[in-house]
Structures are given as C-alpha cells and as structure tokens.
Length: 304
Image 1: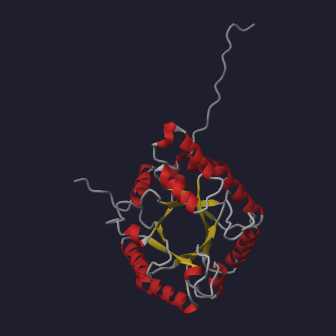
Image 2: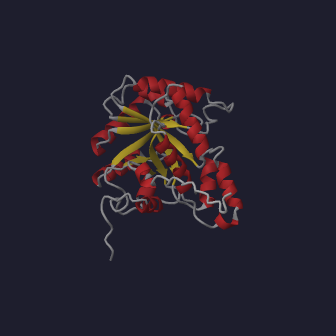
C-alpha cells in the first residue's frame, strides 16, 4: 500500500501569444475620427490596412482626402462603398476614379449600407460588383454577419445572407481580385467559431476577417452593440455589466481573441485569416493595445 499519493499535475498548455494572431490586423476610421490623429505612423505598423467608413452625408471629398493622407503616411486605405447611399452608376464611377487617381486606392469594402431607402439603383454589393467598375482592384472585401442580420433576413434566418455569400464565393473564383469577408464586431467566440465552420461546410471558403471591438468603456460598447444590432454577443456585455468588479474597468478583447487564437492554433484550417478592429473607444486606445501585444508601429514615439 502506498503511503503517499503523489498525483502528477496535468500540464496546462500555454495560450498562443496574441501577437502572432494579430499580425496583419486592420482598423476602421472615419474622416472625422482620423482628423483627431496628428500622425498615424507612431500608432500603426507600416502597411496596415485602414478601412474608411462612409457614413451617409459624408462628402466624398472628405473620404478621398482621408484615403490620400493615409496613403502618404505609409498605410493602405480601403474605403467603404455602401450601395444604398450611392445614387447612380455615374456617381459610383466618379468615386472610384477619384479614389484611384487621388489616393492610389486599389481595394474596397463593398456593402449594402444601413439605410432603408436606396438613394438610387443599387441595393447590394452584388449589384455594384456586377457593374464591372471594380475591375482592376487588387482586393475586394464583402460584409459578414456571424450573428445574422435582420435587415437582410427579417425572419431571423440566414437564408438570404447565405445565398449572397454563395454568389460572392462563385465570383471570387472568376476574378483576379483577392476577396475576403469582413464581419461585424462580436464579443462571444463560440457563435463565431460555429459560423465559420458552417461557412466551410457550405463550401464558402472566402477568408474571414473577424470584427473586434477595441478597448472601450462598457457603456460605449453597449450603445454601439445595440445600435449595430449585435445579437447573442450582447449577453457577454450584459453579464459584464452585472459584475461590479468589472463594471468600471474598460473592456479589452483579450479573452475573445484568446479563444479564437487557441482555436486557430489547434485547427490551422479554421477560416479566420485576420482581425479587423472597430476602435469604439478611440483609435489611439486600440493602437496602444495592439502595441502592447508586440505589434510595433511604423515609427516609434519620441519621448519628450
């Protein structure tokens, strides 16, 4: 009989570093938020893809100027083209010509646009793709919704969303442009993993650039999540709001990204290719968090 029961501790595998998972991340700005940043070079790695959100009413001149400024500072601008706010094919052609001629833009995010009444003939990204006006772009991204989108599928299903993604998958197989799905931000990893696996099972192999909220106050995240129609993930924020030990602390995406990074490490074929940040708590807050993960900016800050 053994007098002592020495139990061997089971080693817990170390979580993969987030830095490797974040390599090649992108970030989203608007002209008015970009204006608050004196210089992006001390904040972002060189060549970072910077999406420029086009909110209804924003002058195209402001959008193009922001793209040109980002290009000049060493980054790769990717403007949004929201179908429902573009009033004609001629306007779309003009926007593309200005972006290409004045800012060297060669990539775009094509999406339906969150307005109820279209300004013109376009209602979807597929219709814009069908014009042929984006021929010659080296990269085209389309929108994805891991938690569904009731603007597209009012019945709560994902029938129309999946039909659209199948069309885009087929288009990706006959275009020279690299394509990917850029998603709405989420807070809960399990639905994201299930959604990505379902796309793969359906034969939709477009790489996924998962939307992630950058560091922000909880109240800010709740406001954006409700406004943007975030679904099951909202539970994560609601649970956090009920925890008094976390209520006053800013949200950071470590836990969410940690689960996805571990899943990617265990399943290299997993569909998430990159991370796309929505800097809901400010561009600098997100950039500083990324720097803390080991992602060096284009230029180091000079301490005064």
